[in-house]
Amino acid sequence: MAIRNIEPRAQKIRAGRLGGLARVAIHGNPGTTIGRRLGGLHSLKTHQLRNTGFKMLKLVRLPPHSTDLAELLGILAGDGHVDTYQVTMTTNSNTDLEHARHTSILFKKLFHVDAPIKFKKAKNACMVVVSSRAICDFLVKNGMIRGNKVKLQLSVPPWVRSRRNYRLAFLRGLFDTDGCVYVDVHRIKGRTYKNVGMAFTNRSLPLLVGFKKSLERIGLHPTQKSKYTVFLRRERDIQRYFAVVGSSNPKQLRKISVYFSLKGGVG
Image (cartoon, rainbow, N blue to C red; front, side, top):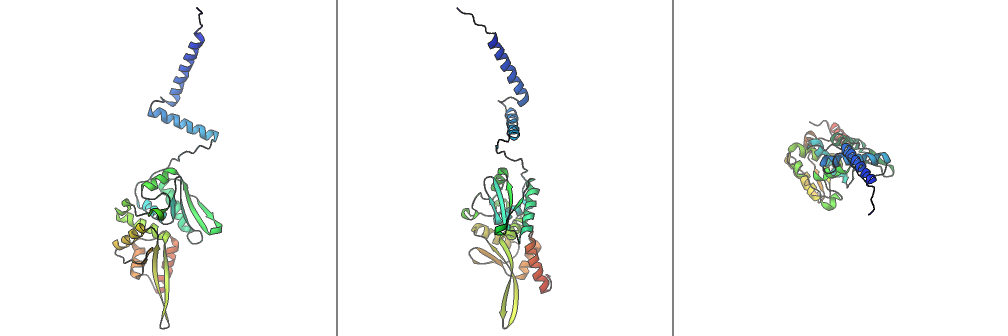
């Protein structure tokens, strides 16, 4: 019977055991939650150092409910789009750039992330862009729709409806994006008359209903003569809207200011 030399095999076993213990000391026991977390973090560092192109979730702050979050959701309900990895808000770069900057600041304030503004010069458009799956998931969880808002018929989120200050902030975000201030000019018996008006247009009917109800809850008198547009036509209602709800879009504020200054004051 041949006698085998088992020493090399024993050395390999001891070396493997020592290597395993050393790895556990660095990364933790792989059979525990802490160990798996340490191993995952080490793996992420390796991908970063080697630039493998591996996609990693960004660490972001997920904020509690607030008026800022309600306003941002109103903005996105109007001009926004939420996908799996990216949320965008697109607007006119000639007339609404200041409001795009306001939206970018809201993203930074709420989530502590960069929200750059990209320009589409050929289309006179600009787009606030945030790339984060965690933020997209958070927005959907808090009432936004992933994909086509009109096809899926977006509505006012329940948590927004629960408090007056949330409703007003959401209303502000909605009108600042999908609303407009206009001056209706007409002539009667040779005299020219000018009347200010507000119009909000949206093809998501539950959102339109929520917008109209929110106006009524603060004592205003909206009308709806077409399927997709709600109007405010009374000057007192319009004055009250800007006094109570306000606007974060300088374009809207300039229009209303010019009209009432020419008319002789807002009071």
